[in-house]
Length: 194
Image (cartoon, rainbow, N blue to C red):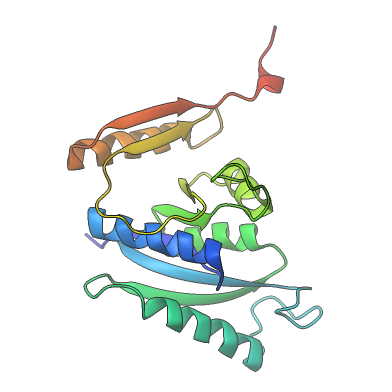
């Protein structure tokens, strides 16, 4: 059986480091491999105007790969890690597509950059992932840094497709590692009939 892989949406900023830090803790706790993915958004400061999807413009690809290599250098020995640079108009869409391509068991991303009160903030990428992917998403609290082994699992489940699979995975992982599991039910109040 091949090793389970977790996809990490990486950027060279604090939220990217948050995601990497928790991914390292997860890899050490659950013996999984990591795929660090840097999506260069078309029409952004990181990419030339309107490059064809999949075209790797040398300077941009080299810079993105350099950032990924710097991130990999912080991953402890013994954790299998691979890097991927993608071009796309939507970061979230390509994280989902890459997760499907790689067979990722989990997508790990940092919280959004807005908001100063809460440690979890839904930015555009997180919101799209949480509402559209059928894969489990781990939204990392702002400022997270590895602090030892995982001590409990929180699982937020709604009524969207994939919810049962997420619940099944959370129960299996919690049982396998003898960890407490807290279930959080999410219901879209606009979809509830009176």
